Image (tube, rainbow, N blue to C red):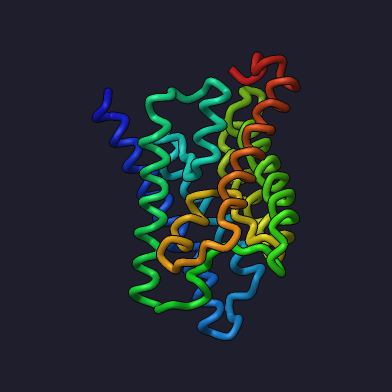
Length: 224
């Protein structure tokens, strides 16, 4: 059982590596090439890679790729407590390795895609990141867990949500919605300003989504 758990955790680490390598890599390449990818292009990359990873690894590890999602699944009763720490460690490790590789290949560009609040407004970023992650987790629950949802569309729905939220709120907060995505670039680049926002807000937002969906689904009776 422990071996199987660590195999799942390894998949989460690889998946988060791919997410950060592609997503923050797009941010860095956009800066290196004077905006050739554009903000909407970066948003598309984040959404597309999340959708692809869900279809590629969802059947192995459930494709959390996000510590806030892992904790929310545990709170909702869909994930065992024994797997929480291995998943989060693997996710953060994958993110750090991706940022390290980007630093080594592209150089120290754009804080390696680290997320920062616009004009240093941490309180604004906290509220917005909480709401963004609430929306994301709500979509995950509704499209990925509810048995009444159309089969096979969860990856598309979740990926579109990530891309959409990155498109309209990315310039303000970075639209992280994912502590691991923010942790990797922060650690490797040494950019720790307002980093607490990108841990606490996504976790709070995801937990709130579980609470609200629990109420709307009559304690997840419509989900199971």
